[in-house]
Image 1 (cartoon, rainbow over the protein chains, first blue to last red):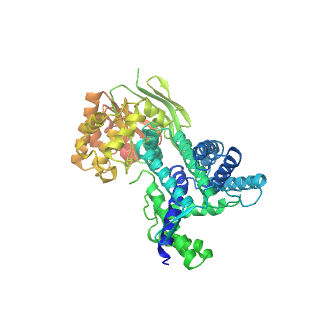
Image 2 (cartoon, chains in turn yellow, brown; image 1 turned 90 degrees about the vertical axis):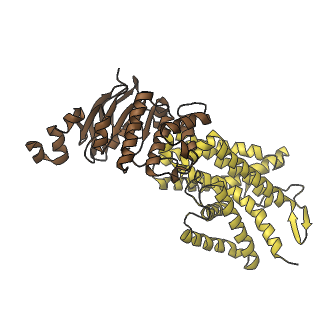
Image 3 (tube, rainbow over the protein chains, first blue to last red; image 1 turned 180 degrees about the vertical axis):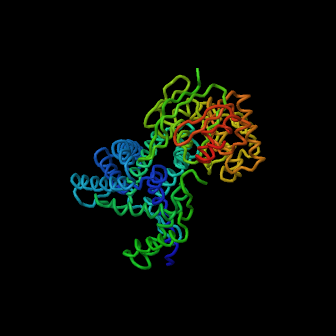
Length: 291
Length: 242
């Protein structure tokens, strides 16, 4: 049996999820200039939220996406107001330290409540799959793929078609210029932090269906969204897609041919190469508004 | 009542006193030129008027309201538009979008294609309506920045070295455009400028800043003969012989 088609399909399915997962991180980075090291833990927090809703309210993790979007938005706005707005007035390094502290705080709080056991959201259709030609496709992965792209499309439309979206792009392009045309950047910061965190929480739902998780998985996820943002370029939703698919291909191909332990190494080598030859990433432009 | 009154404005950066008690007022419909040697505090003054930075002391009153503590976006909504020495457009949005955003956020107007076309027409850019700001020439970018400020329906325009880097033909075009804005829309203009020739044609009154203080206020023709002004520009020796 030819194995390559299977690997390609696996990469594509994973790439869709990776892309969506990274959009929030890259949006927050591009608009607010915050490299949020707690982002991976936000995703895990979302996964636990999905788990609770599944266990105790019987809500399917797909159906609870609106709940986690809402909860994420609130959480993001709150954290921005209470922590990052203050830190942003100090030197940039403080924001980085704050976000690292937040990461430690979230993962340890989760550990207190849920213990370090591997949890997963086991949906009834979790084991189903179907076969096309030589390729086996797990239904769950296809579902996550479709939902990821759908949510990414919604975000794209939001950024390009709505007034708030335009204001976000304007602030990303030139903060001072935006204030001079009547946009209040403080408000845009709150909204962007909210949207970015909503993305992280809802990708937690999807992550929880795809695989098991523990309170301390956030760090690796932060590394991944960071890699995706560097590979694709900070900027647009399209950049996150490019980076997401590239990282998925690198991971799937290298772990099959070289072994599981190699995938992060290969990804980091590619990242360094991208930084040397295309410092703004594959589809990189400076900020969200740039085309 | 004057449209804009500023009183005893002070501003320091670190130990460097950039403005030391600047006061003046601008009448409605006036074109006021502000000149001064490099480092005299001209751009700092514009930044304080537009709300980008806050003064350490002093008061800014616009349309009878004390706006000293107001942030830039609120001043924009109130009708203060500004342009930059080095244009700060949304480079990767089109000319159309660059005007659309202030029209919505600043003026709170319902944006119609016709209105946006009209504004771009005023600055002579209707043929570039769908070009990206980054694809425009310097002169066109300056025009677009004017258009963006006009979309705020401003009563006061602050122009920071709008003529810098332009060739003489382009300078003349912008001079007549600014004149037209005053005549047709009744907009009050404060221009900070190095190109004195352009100012001599436009300004009703000229203010000279030196070392953070106003050392002259009056007609352009009198300014070029003023001893204090010559001293500030050329040094003590020339001031004495003038």
